[in-house]
Every structure is written in structure tokens, then in C-alpha cells.
Image (cartoon, rainbow, N blue to C red; front, side, top):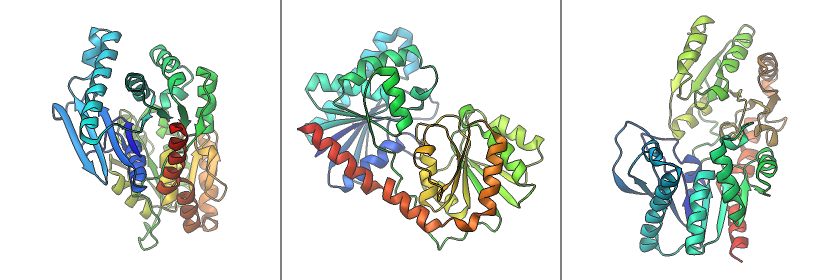
Length: 378
């Protein structure tokens, strides 16, 4: 089957997280002998150098075709209609380029609402079936911005099959847009595996991974850790970058945690996997997640997790995988972390990892997607 994936892009050394979810699924589908081409346009307002025009990357049996001409912020200056036409023109351009090189696709597969909107344009212009995957946190917020609300109202009813990564997000889309969806969880990347030959840190090490933004509630992570470290020797590693870094550093210094809390900055998937393999537990204090890939990445490396019931983890974290606690409650999180450390020997890293791979491994998710694609072609 030839599948054109309408994506946010493809990970690079400069932008390791861009399109990483789409890439993981694309590579898993390619491993099942599908022909997979990822199509994207780059509308980010970033200062680092990017090639003007079209960039093609071929890696792990997946081809990515990306176009960069102008940032979205510049195009929006001319109005929303001009912005939409420009987006559609870019997607049409890379689509035609891909068809010329590989042939007409059997199916379109989009990720995230803005890309689904572009995919609907291609579907209607070329008469193609379209499966859309939704895992965008913007749509799980209490209030959806009017522009995206209207985009969803127009796009979702036109897809042939809508998928969601969690029951909570599926319910949210049904209540907001009146659409039904099927649950297909996020995939765990191939980098994340349990390796018993890698030694753990000598001190109990808790890791937190994610963008340093407000909704990740790193302030609660640090507050909970500060309570627990008074009872147990431990350290906290924070992986990620973002606008909250200065506030996090100030909190760490104010609490006298500079020796036990380390901000490691942005890391690649392979580097994060190595950190997991050397650590003991994951701590997630987010107030909102559509799924939480970091939980399954940690679990795939054998780590138990302490996570908030923020929309995703409660659908897949079992008692043998870790503990769940309410959003925004530092005391509950510190109590859960304390219990996890005390009872740490009861968690079996090999079983946690094996179950995670069985539920969320590349082959499992790729086979589920293939069945859905095949039905959409009938």
C-alpha cells in the first residue's frame, strides 16, 4: 500500500521533536512493506538556518518531502483566507512532487487538525480516501480557539475515518464536534527498549521529560521531589527546553536543590532512551495530555511511572506499571512517589517493558493502522 502521511515534518538534528510521532508510525508502517511518503510544509518562525524551497530526506525506508517558503506569521499578515490558500498551495506542490516520483497514493493519513485540514483539501481535489489521527493537545483544552474550532467543524466530517490516541480525547471530540472516532494509541519509538546490561545510577534517579511549558507543571514535579528527597536519597533529572526554564531554575535555587535537580536541556530520542535506561522512575505532573508518549517511552525501558490523571495516562498505566494521582496536587504526587520508592522492588522492569511493547510497540500499532486503512479502501 502506498501511504502519503500529511505531517508536521521530520525530525532533524536542529529540531529532534518535529514530526517525531509521525516518523515513528511511518517507519513502523514501512517495516510492514508499505511505501510511505511524509509530506509537510514548514511554517515555523525560527531563526536557525533552513533550506529555502523543498527538502527531501530518505531514512529508514521512509521518504520525507518538506517545503519552506515563508513563516505562517508573515503569511497571516495578509489575512486568514490568504493564509489558508498558501497552505493548500504548498501541500498541493509537495503532493504533486511525490506523485511524480512515486505514483498516486492509495490513501492519505494525516496527523493533527491543521494537517487534516490540508489533507481534506487534497482528498477533495484528487478523490482520495483519508484517515486522520488526532493527538493535538490544543483540542483537549477547556476552551478551543475559534479559528481551530471552525477548522475542526469543517474538516472532521469529511475524513473517511477519524482516530484518537485516548478515550478522553475521543469523548472530547465527540462533545465538541459531534464526530465519532476509533482509539489507536501512540506508538513507542524503536529507540526505547529495556536493557538490563545498562547500570542504573547509584542513587535513586527520577526523570521528567517534556517541554518546559506551563501546562507540564514542573513546579509540582519539583515540589513533590523536594518533599520526597527529605525521606529518600534521590536525584531528579529534567529533560526538555522551553519558556519556563528560568522559573524552574529559580524554584530549584530557592529550595536549595541545585545539587539534586539537574536541567539537562533538549535531548534526542536516543539520548532520552539512555537516560531512562540509567534511571529508576518517571514523574509526570502535567495538567493536560492527550496521551503522554513519555510514559510509554519510560515504561518500554522498564521504568515504573508516577503520573497525573491528565487525560492520557489513566487509560494505560496499570497498577503494576506505577501510580496515578490527581492533577495539580503536589502532596498527592509526593505521597505516590514515596510509596513507589518504598515498594520499588515490587515493580518488575522486564514485565513493564514487555507489556508496553506488546500494547504500543511499532508492529502492534502498524498492524492496527493497516487494518483500518484496508477497510477505508473498500
